[in-house]
Length: 264
Ligand SMILES: O=C(O)CC1=CCC(=O)O1
Picture (spheres, rainbow, N blue to C red):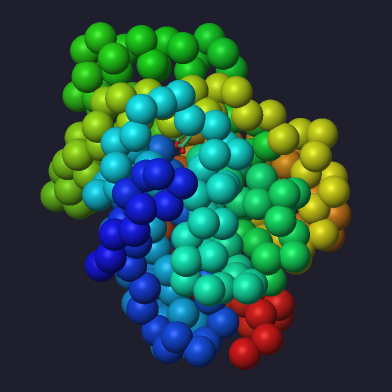
């Protein structure tokens, strides 16, 4: 576990695996922190230098004042990569992390060896839905939206069978500062990468849970179809958060993509 001031914000990050191995950076979704990747990171660190971090306004990173933008969040990743002296890295982004992935691929393609966009799209939601969410969180706190958020994150089967785990993810969500969450919602509201993702040259895998209620498979596939050469894969029995609900299926897809595109 480490903390570094980057772009004037204290970012929390962790790394596992050999320092001389090819690097993979993971970015988590709105209302989660980097522990989300622990299971996948542990498996991949046998072969890769795995870097996890908390976005600004999330986890143990500084709750910097908003609003944020996807470009600002992508710049945080580049600053972290510079700090770790990673000339090149693979990047896996979930949901808002997937928007950061797309922005990085457009902005700094020379830094990327491979890209994974997980349960994300070039445009997520609309002004109305994000403004309503920001208003609810600022006025009544994250606890007031926990129910609908969990419906989008996890399948009905997970809700029925994994109540203890669900309580743990709710605790993670509620650990997010209200204003950091709202500032990230503002970044999501403003982001529309539809016109630029057509320029992505990095080998890209796009993944979606078949039961994702936040970025449904049809929406995610529309973005995959815009990215030249991108592969699209569905994870069965999974909502919006594959590293929590189906980590093994996600790991299988990541391993294949990295074996094909990252040269060890
Ligand atoms: O709707 C949710 O809470 C899920 C989500 C949307 C963007 C993101 O990062 O997570």
